[in-house]
Amino acid sequence: MVVIYSVDTRGLSSSTFTARFIIEGSQQSTRFNVNSPISSKSVESVVEKVQNSKSWWSPWTSWSRCSSLCGGCGTKKRRRLCIGPDDNCQGYRSQEAVCGDAICGRITFGNRVQKFCCPGFEIIDGQCQAVKHL
Image 1 (tube, rainbow, N blue to C red):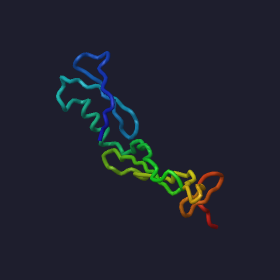
Image 2 (tube, rainbow, N blue to C red):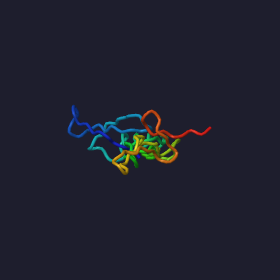
Image 3 (cartoon, helix red, strand yellow):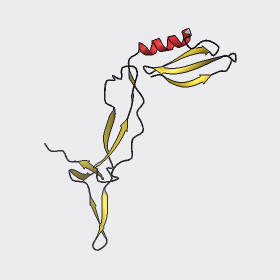
């Protein structure tokens, strides 16, 4: 799979354009002539580069929203795609991280605020942090 991210016709004749694309994470470009047949050398060159390339990872997506805003037991996720001819990238397609470490609070009888964290977390230095058992 080739991702063409830019086509530039500036400074060129009306029958040519430059396509910029990414192979194995590196940016490359090739000039095309629209009057040439589809099997022109420039197209064959791009196809050859793709066929000889290894797969690579896309950039990570943004983190998802945290599943819990407080207590320390929330999670957030992000993903990336394996791009390339063999779909054989090293590493993980997704990541998960703990989030929402603010202290939870609820109003109890007598209008008092009860502070708490999720099970397995304690209030340490003003945040919910995982309890480490030795």
